[in-house]
Amino acid sequence: MVSRSAPGSSSEYEALCQPLVARYNWAMTIEQLRNLYTAQPVRPFDMHLAHGRTIPVVHREFIASAPSGRTVVVFQPDDSFKVVGLLLVTDLEVKAEGRRTSGEA
Image 1 (cartoon, one colour):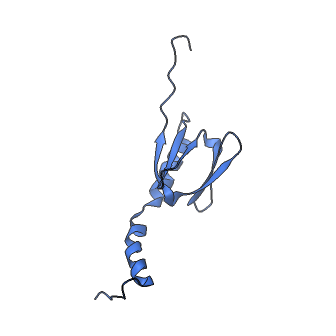
Image 2 (cartoon, rainbow, N blue to C red):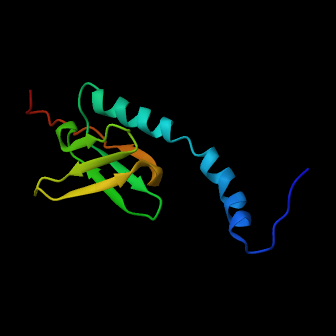
Image 3 (cartoon, one colour):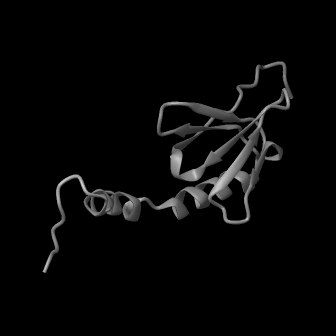
């Protein structure tokens, strides 16, 4: 039997949010991030966040993960940094490899 609560109550709100939280597979995002971190050759990528912001990751040395794996710190070449909750990451976009000109070896 499903219990009903008064409209607008805290428990109704929690019941509505629960399926959204339960469906988010943050472990998949962590695994995708680890795959990009260990990839050879290293390629820069962008982290796209739920609110539309994009955070570039220029090299694996510029990213650090919290022990829980739910938060990362992304450093930028100018020594600024962003702390990112992986629940906010919607996708990871790998940058295209640079094209070589005919004069490069």
